[in-house]
Structure formats: C-alpha cells, structure tokens
Length: 375
Image 1 (cartoon, rainbow, N blue to C red):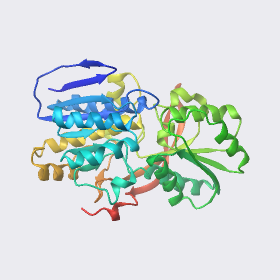
Image 2 (cartoon, helix red, strand yellow):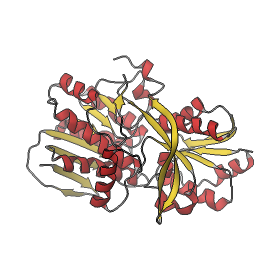
Image 3 (cartoon, rainbow, N blue to C red):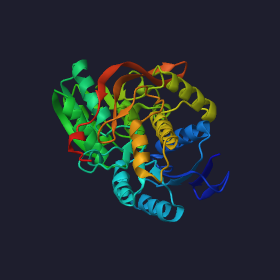
C-alpha cells in the first residue's frame, strides 16, 4: 500500500496505513510560474509508486519557488516527519539551499531535476544521486547541434541563477562559433522586450535560450509576436509538453535537446507514456519522465537493501537496476547520469504539439565536473 500526504494550497489528503517501509519527503514547486514542472515531477513519481505497489509514504509539499520556504520544509520533514529520502526540487537555487544541509543530516537526496555543477564536482556526496542530468548537459548538446546546423554567431540568454549560468557555460563548452550577445535575465522575468530588441540588433544567425516554466512561455510568445525570424535553439525544458500548449504554433519546427522524448523507442517508455496518459489525461513531459525514473530507482534499491543500512542502500542505488524511460541508464562516479542526449523537433501530431527525435547530439555523455568529485 502507498500513503500520500499532500500539502497543496493548505489542503491535506490522507489515505492508507499509518506506517510505511520508506518515508519520502517531496519538496517541489506547485504554485507560481514553475508549478507545471513540479506537478509533472510529482505525478510521474506517484504513478511509479502506484504501479509498483511499493510500501512508500510520500509527503508532498510546495516550496513556492522560495529557498527559505524549502529549507523550512526540509527541516520539518527530517526532524518531525522522519523521512529517509528527500526528492522533488526543480530549481537549482533551491537545491543549493536544501541539499547540502539534508546530506549533512545523513539523508539521501534523489534529484529528479536540478543538477547544479556545485553538486556534481567538489560538492558531490555519497548520498546524493541525480536521476535527471547535470545542468550543463542539455545545453552542451544544443551547442553541439548548433555546430552541425552551421550556426556561427549565436545570441545566448538565460536567467541569472545557478542553472542559468550552467546553461550558458554548457552551450559554450561545445559551441564553436562566435557570440552575438550573452545576456542574463532576472529569475521569474516575464517581459522580454529589451532582450528581443538586443537580439534584433545583434546580427545573430541563431538564438539559444534557457528559460524554464512560465519564463519560457512568455519569451516564446513575445518573440513570435516581435516578427524577429532568427532561428531558435533551446534545451528540452523550453519546448516540452508543459510549455507547448501555452506557446502554440510559435514553437513548431524548433529544434531542442533532451535526454528523453515521448517517442523514444523502448518498452519502458512506451508503457510509461501510455499509462501516464491514462492516469492523468495528458501527455507526459520531460519532468514527468524524470519523476517516474526517480521513483523506480528508489523502488529498485528498496528491493535490494534496507535504507537503515546506508552503505548497502547506497550501493543498490548506484547499480541503477531499473527499466528507465530513457533505455540505457547508468551513473558516473559522481552519481550523475551517463546517457545519450537527443535533438528533437516540435511537431503537430494530430492536432497536439509534441516532440519527435531527429538525431543524437551527444552519445554516452557524462558531465564536465566528475573529475572534481572525490568520493
């Protein structure tokens, strides 16, 4: 049986037995501009738990996209609720506020999204596992794709927070051309008139941007309305299933990079996409797939070791013995994935905007920081 305690907008839902073999604290973004991301991570995670019939109590709470709120929630979950594992954080500034303190209290943290470079390199930890990617990865792939597409003068922009700096660093690591401009926007910004004017005047032959959640929706709509016809490149976050319905036709044909796609051809992914649609009535996003994989990693480790035996449980997590929606999946020495990253294109599939894979940008990509991890 599964018990879910969901603290959403002040409402509490309780079901199932009072005790569970594993207590998981999920701190994620369920309100504001990033709510769709957290909702999809939550729904993917809970779907995997339900399908497995796992004896897991999941406590879900909204961080409101505020680091101080997330820190308070983590303390409550560890000290009052006695959770064994934490997960769920979407934004890297929140991860940097919560994760090191949670690890210092001997808890495991499984990241279904945020992968700041600081936690992949010198700040790595035996009890920290990232099940999504290291922040730079999808942006590295976008830089590699820009080279093959023949772009030589890209304008790049991202929000001024850890994932934003990692994004532009990652793009520049593989991109071989010149930069027409490099701009950091405010986190949560919704008006991009100034940035679009800079792009128009820059002489760029392409635009790479990382603006997750509501930021990306606002930018794409304003960019389409501006009449600027310089081709866009982005990571999958900016063209994923949570974004496309709100953006509409402005996204059609745009190439983007991701480690997952709904049309990825493996048995686990086909079953996931079908079951997610049946459960929630919508196509899953990148975030939903990451939540689903995170839960299945946890469940696989539970089948091999008791979380009270941290050495054994850590070894079980490291094995990553589960059927990932991505197909082949393994952890590198810093507990970040080694995986293929694809180029996708936004298409209209019978009236629904979605993504289709058009190629592989990077094969078996780990990350640039693993050599700095000493554990």
